[in-house]
Image 1 (cartoon, helix red, strand yellow):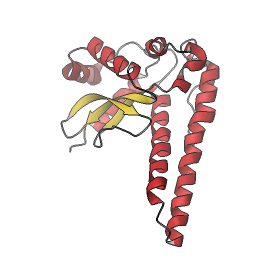
Image 2 (cartoon, helix red, strand yellow):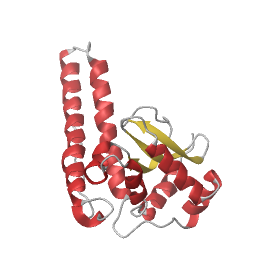
Image 3 (cartoon, helix red, strand yellow):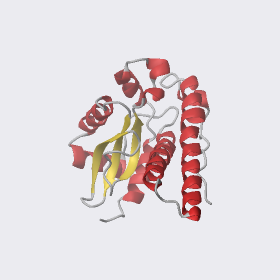
Image 4 (spheres, helix red, strand yellow):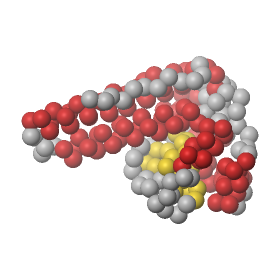
Length: 202
């Protein structure tokens, strides 16, 4: 059975300081993300066992568990690659032009993504996605890791708005954390994902 694997970071835990502390990164990647990897693998094992025994009465619960954990793994894997030390600023080239077309300006896009993250009730994410059915960039809010998502959407950029992403450093000031992350966006990574995703059509 293929298993989920916790990805290695491309930078040290302390490399994103002062914007995100090394202690948060160690806990966030090494414990929280690992828990989703382990939870996804456990759900796959239980699904395989249920199929082998022909006992499918609890399959709905197992599928929901798999969706929660596998989606948490996928979004965190994206989030780590979207961030980089000494990054931030603004995108350039085709990604910058696409953002202007979709949102009117980079500043409006930044405000929308930040507000989307700040106004999540409970735990969740703000995402920049490529939506192939309409062939455009869209910002969307995802509750937990998998609820209220656009099914056709391809995530390009993920902003983690769960408390474990910021509370140790920023306490209850989520907006200060969101502002800090804008100094870390790896626009080269987002642009590469945009180029790959835009070839998709609904």
